[in-house]
Structures are given as structure tokens and as C-alpha cells.
Image 1 (cartoon, rainbow over the protein chains, first blue to last red):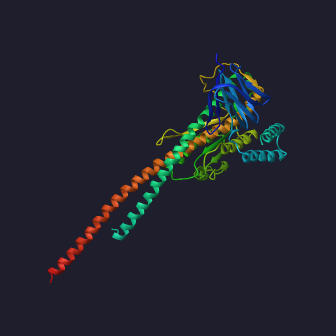
Image 2 (cartoon, helix red, strand yellow):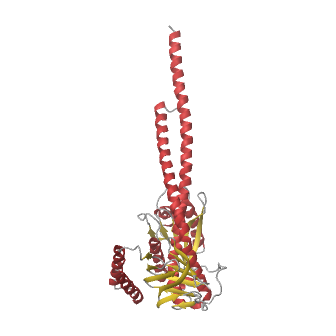
Image 3 (cartoon, rainbow over the protein chains, first blue to last red):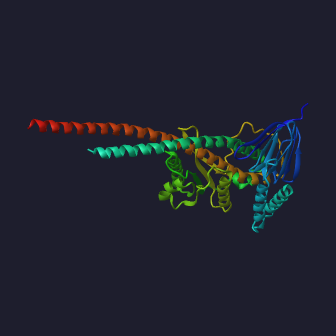
Length: 130
Length: 291
């Protein structure tokens, strides 16, 4: 039996990625990383800033996401995100740009604890990429 | 009758206007293709988002405690209308159609004795509404500087709407935009985004039991604000495609009209030229005869 399922990543501007030979996807969910294999139970979850790892027959890829929602149903995984970047062709300048704006936002004292947590996460991930 | 010189000037001015409208048509056609593409590409995101929300709201057992963005405030007193128009003119009936639709709605709201608040997106909408509904306009937004429609602009509008909702400034929110059907047809739309209209059930939404992480309500309360931005973004994409389509057909018409006008003026010019020649000939001949 095959162990592949299909993955679709969409951002508001376009359908970013479509693959139907995915064996495993690791997503940075809100309460920790989740690895999704075939026949996982239907799930809806949030993403925090982090790295999505996609393992497939045709090659492995990693992407940075800012936020997102995932839905897994009937062996279809959909990831909706407002900002996604392929780690392969990302440039250092862009990373530090995002990092800088996140740090600036963190300096703003009016943000809630939840936002603070997300921003901390974001900066940590971005630092590890640099 | 206009003199020969005047006619000549008019012909050349109409011709140069025709050149401009022709160029504008070309530009609009090129932009239209891009706008149409991005409108099509943007659809999966908003469709998926809608689907997830439908699945989620079906799963909610406790309607009473559902997030306010989904169920509404329980009242129906203050209506907020987001009227989305273009920043540039010369695009046929594009803006007027949206405004017409919106005005009907405004009248209905006011007739029922309810409060009306308006947010205009795009300068043309503000220009057309300020005379009649100037007091109702609470915010005017324009994205004149952004070249392409992008999600962050939509997000800005979405955040303003949500902020006002949280401050309890309105109960119902409706957006107005033009849906792009094809180059000649754009359909003005009104769409209620708060409270969300969940009556349109999707046949795909099964009674699947989802696992949620974190809790259902937390997901919903995070997802709903995003959905509002997404809906506004979708409206902006549709709008920009419609705007270009409308401009293209308007400019096409203008070019054709200018062509007809040039033909008419040319005939008139030739007639009066001939008349002048004939007159001169008659003068010469009768002058010679009288000798």
C-alpha cells in the first residue's frame, strides 16, 4: 500500500505548492510540532512562525511560514498561510528584514502576551536560519 | 458655419484624443490579464478558508457562546458599509454601479430607522458619496500608492473593521464591490461579512469529527478575523479585475466614437472646402462676365 497523500499550500496571492506524492509533513503547530503521515485523523490546527518540512518521493523541501492554518481530511492536507518562503531561494537580507520588523513590534509594550509569544517564536526561528 | 481652419483644428484634436483612448485601452487590456490571473489564483485561498470555517461552525455545539464575529451581537441597529471603488476614473460605469447598489442599501437601512456608517475604500467612491452621505462616512481609505492589489492592504482594512467591531461601533457589516464576470459584465455585489452568513451550506462539509488543536473556540476566534481580511482581499481582487475590464470596454467605445466623429468632421471639412472653391470660381466667372 502506498504511503503517499496530497498536499496543497495556498497563500492569498496564489496556490503556492501542489504535490500528491508526499509521505510526511512536519508543521510548526501552535502547541508544538506535528508530523502528519497518511491516514492521520482529521485535524484543524494553527501554525506559529516556523519551518514546514515536506518529505516526498520527488524530494524534500523546507519552507518558512509566518502563520497559517492547516486542515487534514481524507488524506488531503491543506495549508493556508499569508507568507511562505522556500528556504532554498531565500536570501539573508529578506530574513533580517522580517526579523527586524518583528523585533520592532516586540518593543511595542501594548501587545498581548499571546502576540509576544508568537513574536518571540518568530525571532528565534529567523535567528536559527541566519 | 465653422471656418475651414476651425474644422481642421477640431479634427486633429479628436484624433489625438482617439490616440489617448486607444493607448488606455491597450494598457487596460494588459492590466486586465494580470488582474484576472491573480483573481483566479486568489480563489483557492478564500474557498478553502470558507470551507474550514463552515466545517468548524457546523461542529460548534454551543451557539450561544460562539464568537461574536460569527453569531453577531444579537442586535441590528448600526450598519457598517464598506464601499470598495477604484482610485482612478475613466472606467465607464464601474464606480457608478457600485455606488448605485450601495445607495439602495443605504436608503433601506435609513428607512428602517437604523444607524448607518460608511467606510470608503478608493477615492472615487468617496467623491461620489460625500455630498449625500458625508456625515455617515467615518473612514476613507485609499491605496493609490500600491501598484498591485496585495494581501497586506486588505489586512489593513480588515483590522480597521475588526477594531471597530470590538469597540461595539456597529452590529452588521456589509461590503460592496464589483464581481468580475467578463470584460463587458461586472456585477455589483453586496456581501455581509459580520455576522458571517453560514446558511449557505457546502456539500463538501461532512460531519467529519475533527481533532482540534488548540480548542475549537480558540481556533474560531483566531480564524474569523483572518476570514474577514480574506473576504476583503477577494473583493479587492475582483474589483481590480472589474475595473480594468470596465475601463477597457469604455475606452474601446470611446475610440470608436472618436473614429466616427473624425469621419463626420472630415466630410464636413471637405464639403466646406469644396463650397469655398465653388464660391471663388463663381466670383471669378461672374467678374469676367461683367467686363
